[in-house]
Length: 81
Image (cartoon, rainbow, N blue to C red; front, top):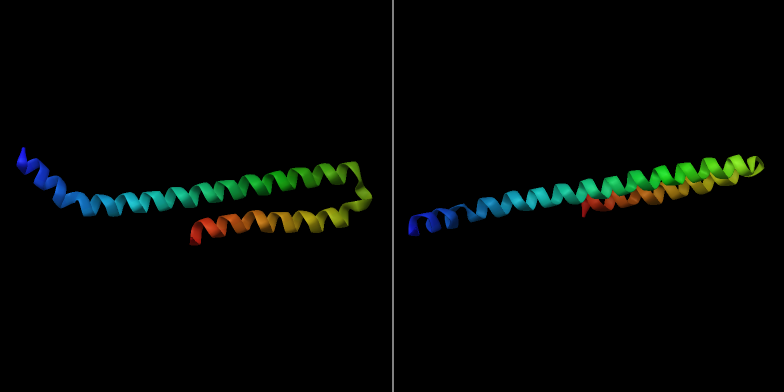
């Protein structure tokens, strides 16, 4: 019994390091997933807005690009922080 506990204590730093790497990967993946969903929603709503009011397509395009850039910023924050 004591041997098993000693082996577990020896492996604890390695397991902690592996768990930390997995947690960081999950954080990055969820951040990128959120950004992808946000960009999709911005694109969908931009197309709907142009369909309703084609004369305002220039203004809608500019605002859509700004919205997509802000959504992509979330992905960069999740990957680098």
